[in-house]
Image (cartoon, rainbow, N blue to C red):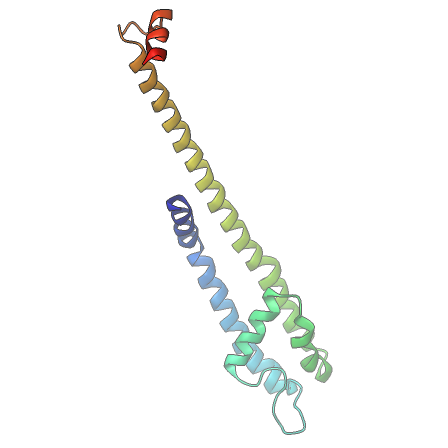
Length: 159
């Protein structure tokens, strides 16, 4: 359990910069969506004058996050896309950078941190195994000559 917590702690430390970059990207994409999609093309305004695609900043942030992290981006994109075909460039840029670059970068960092932690654990296990074998050898080698004789093995097995 302690090793897993140590692994999680080192992974989180490695991911802080990427998470900050991801949050800044979502914030920038939200701002861009509110400026470009809603203001210029209406973002799919319904009969009551409310934008269907990005009604407010919180909803816009959530929808862009969902669009990047899951595969239901057409649900987010289609109302604005039906109003103006040029919104494809915005949604395409957000998907390409967010999904194909940032999420893969996050996965690569998690994988690298996990691999490093597993290598450190394996090295610590090998060191523990080596030191335990040395202690066992020292206990069996009673005369200290660096060789375990047949008599020393018999004495150790009788104890």
